[in-house]
Length: 126
Image (cartoon, rainbow, N blue to C red):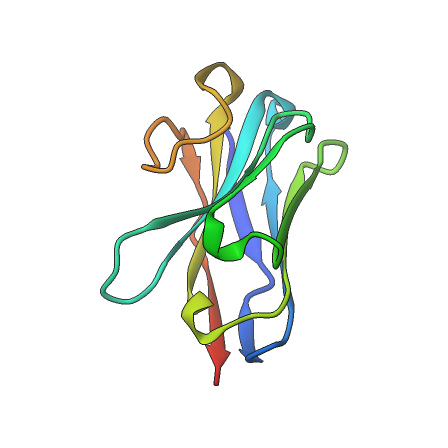
């Protein structure tokens, strides 16, 4: 069993930065690839970024490439999403999710993830 708790969301002006964190409980964190998803009001959930179980590979949706950076610290059971040059269209609830490494590092659809956090709100004002 893994529990995920996100933090770090908030209100920021366009062009600003935020760093999201996801803290995981349990001793098996390093056996999971981790992803961030987001969901804006009235829109479907969207894949944002993923990192492999050992941090060796990262993946991003095109709209955040060059602005967002995902990282993890397996010793501390945490994954982070550094978000720079934020835009109003980045406004959403951001969720972290854990995917067993044998299923591959990520899925745009959100399928195959065993655990999800409760989400943290990110609001970017123009």
